Image (cartoon, rainbow over all chains, first blue to last red; front, side, top):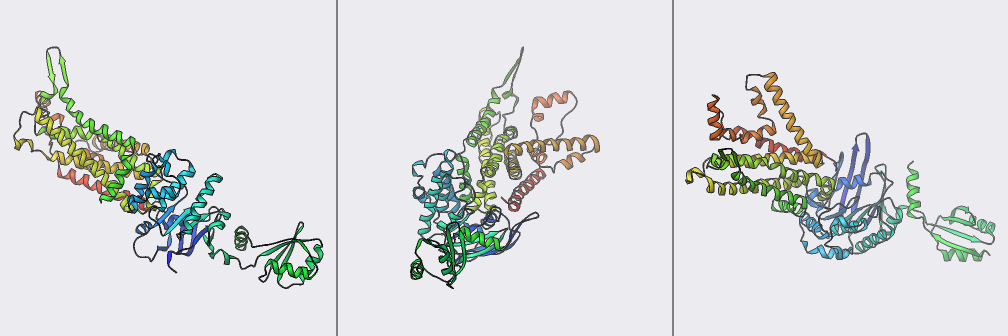
Length: 299
Length: 278
């Protein structure tokens, strides 16, 4: 697969603090990546290094095939870091035209991209008059001007109201569906879960996991069950080798699977054993649970 | 090159404060012409500045480039703020992320500095030429275009000074502090000069020899003050028995020192940006 960004043994120290510690991973074309990690885990520093604004201490990285300089490569990248940065005295259109000049692309796409993020009717308003949500959407429009190979978003919904968060998420989903590679840094797990296919998990500057969301945890999921006779239910499941850990949680029984099994199969199995369930739900661990699990192991 | 200049001009064009100060600056240059209309009346004694020969070719090149250079502080404000704004709006970071290299960023600022200096020089030339043609006692081609090195010195003086301002903007990040630093630096140079001249090396020219290597002193050495060269002042001085014997020429050493500082300021600006995590 074509790789977009390769990072090898990247390290960054700020005085005594190691913000990024011997980090290596590869971003491949066509996937939507989430970089996960608690605050201070080195997400923004890593992005800062590959985006040419923070100097690395050691290690290396290269964009695309590694030919050409970083700043040339960045012309094919769209990126937003932290909060949107524009010239407050310029209008939306003037700001985007400036970005076009820097990226050496034609200014003809300005209106089209403003349309994409729903700012066309405010195109001649000064940036300083925009709300935070509008500023963030303008930043996305600006990152899209060069039809980038990869879109990098660092905490794109930080500080936005629910409506703003929803709008940004819709825009990201639409862009992802068009096949653009996306790298989304966030500490909001449900945000990543909703849009990402792959994750990079960082903790204290080290990567804990790089890969697809699905294979992040090898588990087959779990059932939550309820029946009139809970004791018989538990005894039956204990006798089935497909089930591992069983746990009572209030009125419900949580049964973890050792082998794949769908709900219909379990329902038939229990019915044959004379147990009628009143509640049967199959679930996979949420990204949050998986994330906590992964970070817990490292302690 | 043109792309980089274009990027910078777009940032300045829509900035109202920068626009207003630049316009004021150029209007003030034309106001040098107003000196012509200054008149004093001490009872029966009538004194008219324009009659003192300040607008005679070739002296006018010297006089106007000196007066014009005093106004450079206005453009210094524009240049310092065009740099420090990039920090406060955090657009420096965004420019780099968008694919401008740090080197390109510094070059785009330096090109703007050069452009400001070129326009100022052309403007000063036109104003001086028109004033000279109106008031000069001598209008022969040979005389008009003699002493032209003052125009060159004016250009170099502006480039060096604006590069200094740019460097301070990069270093200090805040426009008010950068301008304050400029003033403090000026005072420091004067204090060092005072200590050398009046304390350590009395009755020798060691102080002048050392001081010519300081940036602001080097810039001011490019164009020596023209007032003591005026006929009226000269004759007054000789009556008091203290004739001026100093040279008013533009010295090649001063030009070399100013150019060296210009290079250092731009190079240091680049180094600071390169080393800094933004």
